[in-house]
Length: 254
Ligand code: ATP
Ligand code: MG
Image (cartoon, rainbow, N blue to C red; front, side):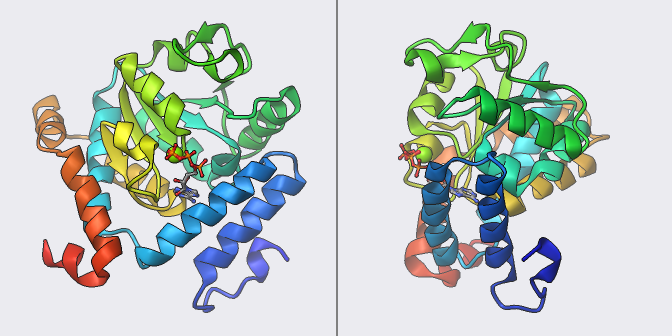
């Protein structure tokens, strides 16, 4: 089966497409087998959220775009699931916000690092960081601490979709502004974020790009007020309400 063979009219089109891309990612050596488990966990939350971008997530996506546009040095971290699901979309987000892409793996192997860098290049990325690994995140064991000194090491704003909880916390402690995309509002990663986006990475990344394009001409003052008005705890609470109560609660806020 290829992407094109899943009929768009299928009621579970997006979910089938996502599974298919992850499977293909594993076959190509991009996604780890643990990535399959993470995907399953994510799907369960997406199902409960109604497989849609809830209003509070859309707000967070706009805030993320404002942070990226304000940043001195924004970096988007790419792991095996992200590379399999949204390779072209992260390249576009990087272009729309002048952010670097850096490959950053929980289970780091040279083969997978190279496969992901090549895959991103095939999707239009020019410069992909992550292979130098001459920087370290303090407080993590050796392999998981590795970053590029002139990439995530130097970034003021980092987007970490599907980041592991420990590393999300450690990055936060380095004083970086952290945007996390994670379907589980209770996960440590989402809780460690300055901007938690509780949405599927497949919807979230293109939507942040769209917001960035909308905000491209906004002045700093406008962007700063978008950032200042955001309340991360309230965003997490809204997502949890949407999950617990079904459609009504979150929709009723608008
Ligand atoms: P914790 O953050 O609580 O320590 P964890 O990071 O160890 O948990 P994992 O199962 O390793 O938990 O992480 C996978 C996370 O990624 C889950 O929270 C899951 O909801 C999220 N996830 C998986 N697929 C997607 C996706 N397509 N879009 C957004 N989030 C996803
Ligand atoms: Mg997590």
